[in-house]
Length: 236
Image (tube, rainbow, N blue to C red; front, side, top):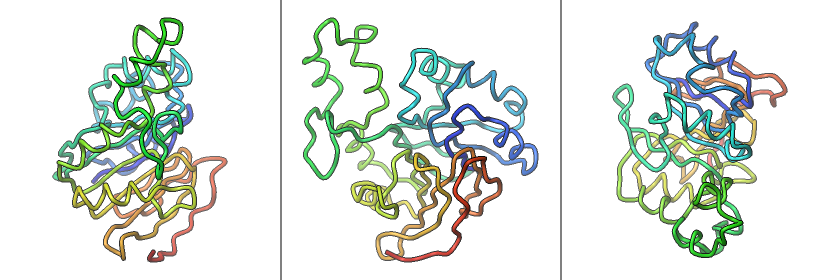
């Protein structure tokens, strides 16, 4: 069993409660952790009870400390962004971060297809730790998106939403199809819902802020300040 956790935004109590209540094989965080201390410290109570995986969200690049407490934590190698990992017998692909107009915001063509392309345009004062600006470490680049097309997965987890959400992107529908995924889970919009895309071929589950759902999209925990669950399915 795998649990999917919506954007914690600093509140990790629902994740800890969910793991203790349901004893999953793994839990996948869908971005925007906003960590005031390292991820392994925040989840110390459950680290020996389950596997913890994550994708980054846009806010994980807002501060040096938030970035370091996620990517530099003892769980930093559990980042699913840009790769496929077998977890509890399912192949899970991850695409963290968000689309940004300066880099690539579909349906427009990419302005900077790779991180290296962007780095070449950055003056010394624009660089962060001799690399691209910090916020673009949690930006989706065309190269990373396309690389996933060559792989296969059962489940795709993203921070951004596909076309099932009013602020979603069809390009994520296309990626799920290319991967052969039959399920998608995303955060970012702080809204629990379940719908289908691609003529019913792919189930999409949005997970609310600090909320928890299972592999079938069943809402197990509703986070504070979240939209109420909308459980009715509709095909698009």
